[in-house]
Image (cartoon, rainbow, N blue to C red):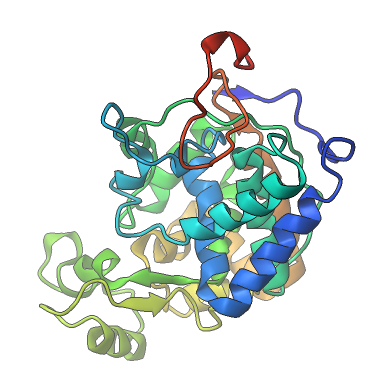
Length: 311
């Protein structure tokens, strides 16, 4: 992985001045149509941005098994059509100019801002990858079962701190997750045949009803108590033992991350400031591979190698 040098604010100021306005406008319309969709699109940044090259968006081909079918993504990531809508709108105004990888970054920022969270200036100029790898995604992306120790190690590989980890996990302030991701917590934590003892009893009863043993594991539950509002309720829920995912609740049970959970639960501004810093740092992690500007975010352009832009 390499840290970018060309990334900068206002990257499209001369080549496509309305780019950021167009992205936000499409995101706003998507939120009105289906409120959950903006949270779903926001997740793309984390799932793409230990590389930040829009490899996540590529559909499978006969010769390539892409990242959409990776373990952490399949039957989980959704709302790819919103990115399609953004790209289509951009292509009408500025054909062949705006990178799909930058759309992910702008859309993630807009998802936060449109739901009540902070707004910030993004650094842009990421090239779109020429391929994708299910194997690479499987090797990098954490499981919902991950504990804080493994998450700290993962983030450290990309020069992201413990504070960054906790703040970025606060992206779960909005959105939902599937029962599939918590069945082990409810009925067989660590192979015990019992529920996770740190789940607050009243919350566990609610989850038991939502996600019964033998039930439909594609049913979704809210990631915090205010799933349409970007705020610090997520951290308050963790302190109270009401985290939905194991990888969330572990942030409060693990000593190295607990103090940041407490801090953010008590001070929303501290959380917002740390989130912006973490989002910018995560967005600076690039693959360093050759790239292009895709005209359709789902497929690599049909063009000869000699016109591809090298990193």
